[in-house]
Length: 168
Image 1 (cartoon, rainbow, N blue to C red):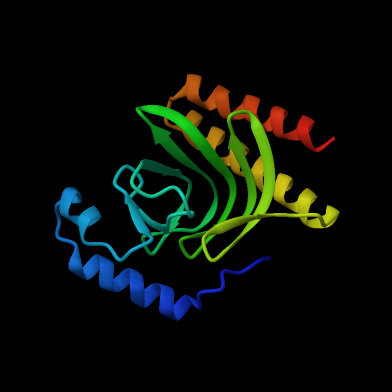
Image 2 (cartoon, one colour):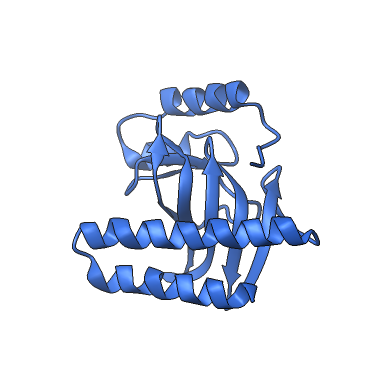
């Protein structure tokens, strides 16, 4: 499993500072977070923003552990109210690690280092990135279906097929 370059203790301290500075108000919580850290009020998760994603509406669909995005999920970026880009894959301690970027129907496997996605030439890591993305899409689909959101669940089920076909 890939790990972020920021040690967990430093990350947790940074997040604790951000959480301590933030009040109960979601508007001021976003404004007082340390640079590069974002909060999704719908999931209650904090996470590091991928480089180039700041200043935009971002949503995390996935598990949170100790208020940090942690596990398989989807990080969605909206631009002018429309889905612009999505990361499907694994988050560890609030940082995206290994998955794929769906960017205008271009699917790009990669790993994150210091908040930036790096393309990969290694076949094993590429397959691992796609497998993480497929698992993320499946888990999001299951979670949405269990909440009765059938239409959106179907979208993520279809995405598992799209991701499976892209790796072939």
